[in-house]
Image: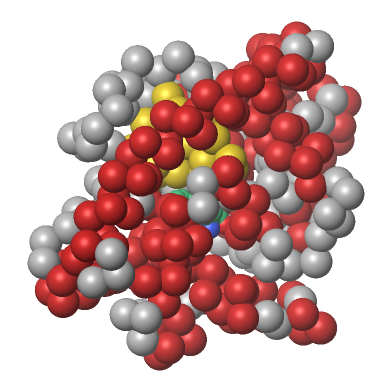
Length: 330
Ligand code: AMP
Ligand code: TRP
């Protein structure tokens, strides 16, 4: 159980409740959360305020929050070991974000790759929240004075900005926040199965990703149609991606032997794909089974989130007292 004060080497991370998770989310973030919580005090958040920055259905959002909590827990996040809560339950997140708004240069936000990409994808709804999104993310992290943030590679820039905001705050108002760093896995960037030059993402379409909820048949089908050698070459992006997935799920030894065989031209792609598909299926099986069990206990999920919010808020309130005092808004 976490003690309710600031912790050394505290881990903080979160995801948006925007629909089912894919293998990239799992191998880039979730899988390492589960490992890290064994050694570190950890807080895992469902960042619903971030999800308001793109078009969404207010009617569906509560259900999506529960679904994401189910994903966290079935993948192995343990509420006995970690704090799990919903961002909007704790108003201190937006309060701190406002204060950070006032010390973050516009130019820094304009550089953010995710903002540029999302502005491209959602041309009809480029709102101010989308622009200041990384400031709210910095507030999420620094409210708990978290030292480490396990995320996929696409979030590195946001964590760097978090560090810049912490430094600026410390310089202006006195030492308050740590200089937070990311924790990346070897598979911090899983690529699309069909277009391995792009990162795996739901917005590319069904065939591009493996959902954690996909059936064994769906997984076999998707992996079989994964692109391998598009440009010739010794090892294309698609093949590298398949090996990366295998390595993340299975460990190095078996993979280096297969890589050897591949180099010698003794590993037909059909065989490699069968191995990859079966590895994914057997890895996801217990997660899918646990999810089915947890789905029967939805009320308990609500209780876990309420208890998580209570524990998180104690830390959040303490930080805000300090921050309010320092910035002169007592
Ligand atoms: P998103 O679903 O894009 O909000 O991402 C949730 C988490 O999964 C973040 O930590 C991302 O960095 C991570 N993530 C998303 N896509 C990938 C990917 N293709 N490979 C590795 N990590 C990813
Ligand atoms: N921006 C992150 C994503 O798209 C989600 C997020 C919001 C987050 N706040 C965070 C991740 C704080 C880590 C820490 O995945």
